[in-house]
Image (cartoon, rainbow, N blue to C red; front, side, top):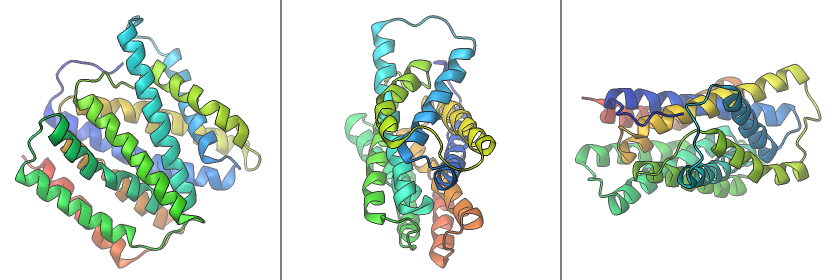
Amino acid sequence: MTSHTAVPFRHGLLSISAAAVAWGVGGAVAALLMRTSGLGPVAVSCWRFGVAALCLALLPSDGPSHSGGKRGSAVLTGLGLAVSQCAYFGSVYYAGLGLGTLITIGAGPVLTSIGAHLLLGERLTRRSAAAVLLALGGLALLVAAPAAGPRPELGVALAVLAGTGQSGLTLWARGGGSARASTGAFTTGLLCLLPFAAIQGVLPTVGQPALTGGALLFLGTVPTLLAYRWYFSGLTAVPGTTASVLVLLEPATAAVIGVLFLGEPFTAGLVAGSALLLAAIAALTRA
């Protein structure tokens, strides 16, 4: 499980950045999977949590954790992950990879910075405020790009829901909540989604079984099991506002993959918006 020992600030920055890139790649893999396998957003999310829970169950444990507090934390984390990730994949399905990812993560800097200031007493420095403004400017340019999905309005609504869930997890972890990428958390997410996945169809109906299985295995390990461990570990050292802007590496990664490999439109706004996002990240990571 994620260690509760002190994590150096620079290591925290790297951990959250690595998680964001992994999530961006994971969104692209999920978008391709939903196009080629016949699986819907809920089913893909269900498989993602199932693979992660199984991998953790097979790994050596850090020791027994049967206290009510830890079980309660696992349930809350699992619920938050189930809502945010299922809504995110839905936004990718209905609005396209680029737009769905951008709006999901774009809500983070605003919601997290306001919440951290009001609820956690974190001071909003000039550098953090400038970085948030840069990030929002970049997102505005990126969101103005044409949507690639069949129902952009529904995709946007799901993206806002996903961003709200992710921001809530960030604030809870920063506020002392025991948010961890644990077997209990992923099992809770799996159990929450399984009934809906059964209605939608939990088994692939088309495509190549080997490629579909490999994509589901990747989704459950790298952008789920590993990325959330990196993210929650980094949150022990990095302020919530900084983390919310670092996570903007996810939409930048997703936008590039969408253009290069999924045929999504390439515009000047995409280039300018990505540049502003990177500038915001650079402003926060300077010593």
